Image (cartoon, rainbow, N blue to C red):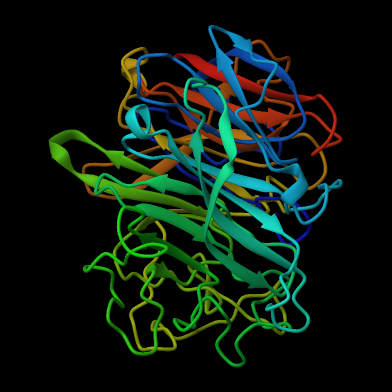
Length: 445
């Protein structure tokens, strides 16, 4: 979010008809009467700002919850353990304050975590002495290992820094980490921050997201099992390039706060990413190897005008700075509905459901929106692909609330080892405080 949130801000029309969820054009600030309903079950409370969740596939049923303030907590047998898995607070750029987008933002467990205890985290640090003049913050990707004989505690002394990247502004850090079905580590990084991708520290004329000589505004893919400090998969689109960064998997993103993999029926593999918009539009992309997703030429399918970001241009190029075709989103929604009322502000990417407990939800992509600006009006959506290949989506009601709304800020979604889904949110006052909760989606009807 550009206006101070770890996932970035803004939100929406929603004139769609989801075949299985059947929702029409939404009245402002109302859940459709015929919307499907989810029931949430509280798993743990008392967090400040829970922004990510990971689950080891080792039969323990544990959940690891990432707090923006620099601590990772362990939930085991329904209890939050007193000792954290990892604490990097003393390495953070600064203790995150209200509205700050910096902090501990991502966690991924190695595919062989059960045997090797390797975990990877992504967080902001102070600029190093080597950082360019004017650098505001730095993002770090680091590896840690679990303490021998202490399966719920990482050894702080094992930290291995894979890379540090200077950023010109404090916002648009992205921060998602995930291992793909190919065993490689994927990393999302925002465009550097600020507005329009054209401020100080952004590549003149084209912006960072379109510039393949730097890593800002990209989704990266690296091999953490080879090379020093990592290897480059041979199939990366710029592997072996003399100019473009070989770590790049896809580009043209503003702030891809959360992405996830779906290994669906028939062995298909798709990477879903929610990319937070600036002024008018939010989008979800299915990310392809080497794909260019358009920022800052486009915001969703709208032609973006950096000189007046509240009014899209009538026309714009359909190719990027390197003449690559711009790929459009599978889903998008405006920040204002058809009547001009605010609907949301920042897309929160989620997961395609592949669990066993909710058969009617299987194959649907569950995602959300942070909130309408500063009010606790976060929303949860479900989307599905029609037989024609197009996608449609609708808002879900939340059971047990007076108006069907969550009444909280949506921060992230999570998935456990069994494929069940979780919603991470907070009330107000984040990232400090104790209003943050982790809920499990236990019913869908």
